[in-house]
Length: 366
Image (cartoon, rainbow, N blue to C red; front, side, top):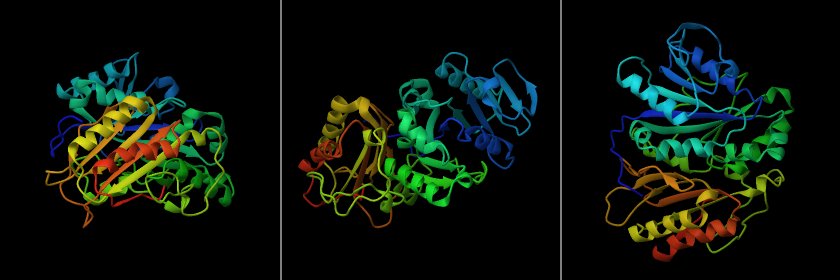
């Protein structure tokens, strides 16, 4: 797992903005860039000409970075995203540019996984930047068809911390509700917000991750807890296999949706460190490429406080010690979202933890 990060993390927060084609991702981004009350932001796009950003530019520093009237910076990727981000860090540290946050806007139906891994794997970026959240914009009008046709869209939904539902005014309320239920079934822990013609509260994109020093225990718990348990496709009663406790609720899943599975575990007692390491190493070795997100609060034997961890495929953030317990709840909670793994497979992977932990366990309702 690596060494825990400091509780005073000063790295730049990075927000990854993804979304379905035509869902209104750029409209949402323009809204934030025009907001003068928010923090100064550096936006990374593929090409200025294709970005569709408002061209209210004050000056062009060079062919790659422009300053906008809002005070935000816009930077185009020239070849390699890693070099682009490293260059932004270098210029900021040299006092040439000033910004407090970074937004990476992906093009089209890009898979968020490689970008998340870049931030975790590259030593220079990992020392200077941290992932603050993945935002996926999905439109209620064409979104259902996009999920049916494009598995990349399903991956974007499954990996999101925040799902922004757009264009709900273009479809009947019942249609929007069914689509929202489908999104919730694919990613039970993601928060879902409705965008009113691309407008959201200015701070809606910030501080999404529970893996940050400033996060309160309650915020970290929300990051791990299903937003709408009633939207889950089914539930299981224990960790030994699939034991639904009620009839499936929500929309019928498409073939692409069915490739995404999730499972979770709550452990009442501290986990032996060897058990956690064994479970994580085994999961990575056997199914690393299939793991979209793994996150959790873990209470290890011998440690006074729990820590928060997060990973994408075979790459993990350094664990972050929590400042305090979330209320009176002193249990470990782990959530796994994966593709091409059945729920029984996911549940069995968590049995490794149960083999070393006390027998009293509960499962989250998804």
